[in-house]
Length: 594
Image 1 (cartoon, rainbow, N blue to C red):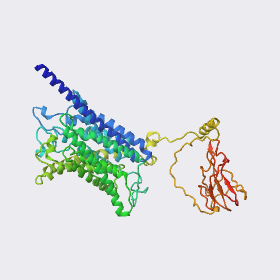
Image 2 (cartoon, rainbow, N blue to C red):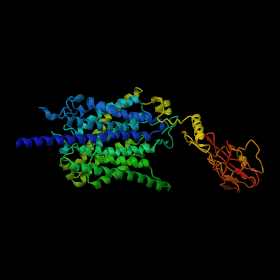
Image 3 (tube, one colour):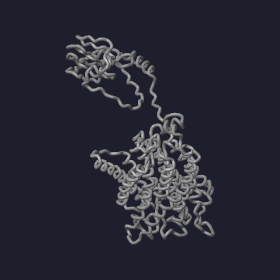
Image 4 (cartoon, rainbow, N blue to C red):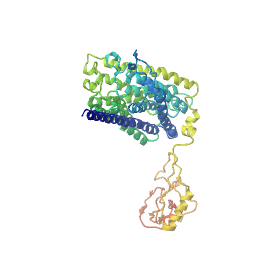
């Protein structure tokens, strides 16, 4: 009997271990999918000439993050556990476990995978900020350096059992509590955000953004909008989805954590929604007060949503749901104000990653010190020696701990990344050549543009048209292939302008019959639609009537729907705009060929 019970207990343990491993696999995969979200968001936010470059950088972020965290990042973050030593001492940097030599089972391996996904997220935050002017070599160097050394030290301080700020320190808790950063508002987003800010300042703005060609300040910064709002929205949705691995997944185990996982999912959702609404409608209301006009900026909604997600990440397991709504609303305001502030001080952030991750990373860490609820702290395995300030106004120590974490992250990242970026700039490895920047990094660095919009050859289309006509008759008409053309401003001719303003037909027109010969022009504009597939139109003119080339009669003529001849011919369309100099005649667009 006892053997049976032991066997069942062993089987149950295996099931539990497998379930927890699968939970981390799903959560880590969702976090890793955020790389695709960042790629789409960044691609949509840059100009068309730099899409290849930013997409490749996002891909290489994942590659550099994986290798950096494999070789030494994980060892620095979690190696050298003091509890295994006869003389336990807290270590600032781990000193064993390089190349994962100390990982021996599935639970440890899946733990590394989950942590790698977080490291890659921290690295890719910077990609959008330095887009359109950063060299590929500099980006690769920074990505590996951040994930292999800078970020792991921050992880160790907060999440390792040996971290001096860690709430899970097995030796001594910092100020009897330790910092609460459940899923990484500080560890991941503030680290990536302050790195992005440093990089943007040292690298400088994009050409023409704040200064003219002579280096003089522009009175008003030049807008450089992204080329695809669709990609930006897609990226935002993918990131939002990935956050359900980021926040609920930080429970690390599925068994026994249902309450924490469920609460994290709820707080994550409402913070994102309230952040989006807050940022967009704040921008709309301010515009209404300033100009009297109302518009709705999707960029504000998208980045407000992401700001709300960043802000709720630190305390998603210790907030009441209504608190998460407040945090999201404030996050939208933080994003809006800090985005305007960056433009004011002329720091160029191509995708507004700094307001989203740096500013709201700080707000997220602070919010825990204000709103952490004692009961939820216990459920999330935190000590409850100090709680959110609003739950005990006489004890602000948790808030002080949170502020110390912010100061440590900013100080550490600044001390390492400022010299690193300055060195890259001094070596000429940081910024691309001005001409390459002007042409675009896709052509100058990646062998061509991202989009191939070349249509079929005109001769081939005409040949196919002739083949189809031979089978179906002259009334058959292919759709004309659409060629991409850059948008240009065109002057539209006024509808009631006198005929002398426009080019006249070279041949004299009959004065009585009003007959028209196709392919005549009115002001250089041709009408392709009056005569197609055997359904032409008639125009009746009364002495000197004028058709302005857009299907409108500027005189007293009337449009009549009398059927005409065939309008299709030889693979093209009949063009029949004309000047009618006749008397009381008819102008027919049918049965003509251009």
